[in-house]
Amino acid sequence: MDGIKLVNVGKIYTVEKEQVKVLDGIDLNLPANKITVILGRSGCGKTTLLRLVAGLETFEQGEIEANDVKRKAYVFQEDRLMPWLTVRKNITFGLKDKVINHQKIDEIIEMVGLEKFHSAYPRQLSGGMKQRASIARAFAYDPDFIMMDEPFSALDFFTREQMQKELLNIHQKTRCSILFVTHSIDEALMLGDKIVVLEKGIIKSEYEIEEKNHERDLLDNKFLNLKKQIMNDLKVI
Ligand SMILES: Nc1ncnc2c1ncn2[C@@H]1O[C@H](COP(=O)(O)OP(=O)(O)O)[C@@H](O)[C@H]1O
Ligand SMILES: [Mg+2]
Image (cartoon, rainbow, N blue to C red):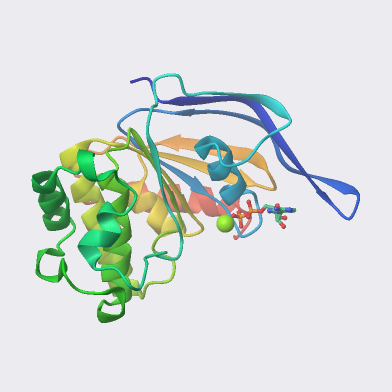
């Protein structure tokens, strides 16, 4: 698989007869098997970009080439589980009965650490566990590409750090392609093979991170320097 390529993509919303350009001239490669992070402040166009790539939104300008990508899955900011279904039923809900491979579903449930809770209902789960179930649901669909829109931003600091590590472990195992949106610089530094800084609908900068250890030390000078650079790009220093 080659990944997804955006060429000169632009998106306009019309609000009260006024046209607002939300994305402008986006040229971007989303490489296969990697984690690409879109980073930017609230309102800069991150969700719009994700929705365009997911095919959930039309756009006026440019092209998105995703010829080899057959199956895309989407993880939302909120967990969107169905309260009347167990964890397992939530995970298999969108799948046709005939295609459910129960052994594979067991493996996915184990991968996200919910094996003891497969028959629990969402109200019996913590926020982190609900997000794990949402991630499992995305993987059960057997996607080529997973889009995640700030999936950990409702979690407390410790749970969030743990979820980031778990996502990296899952990525190591599956080598799936991920497009991950966040407004947290640290989260971007922790997860991204590639970090794309978005500002007011325009790509401000891009960074590729080569790192052998998949658990990164953000206090290492390399990451501190990169953080300063990104803070500078985002004008927070
Ligand atoms: N359906 C819509 N109609 C009109 N404007 C929208 C719509 N969705 C988003 N916007 C506007 O587009 C801009 C980018 O929004 P969004 O992509 O949600 O940003 P982010 O996810 O980075 O916070 C914002 O100014 C927002 O108000
Ligand atoms: Mg958003």
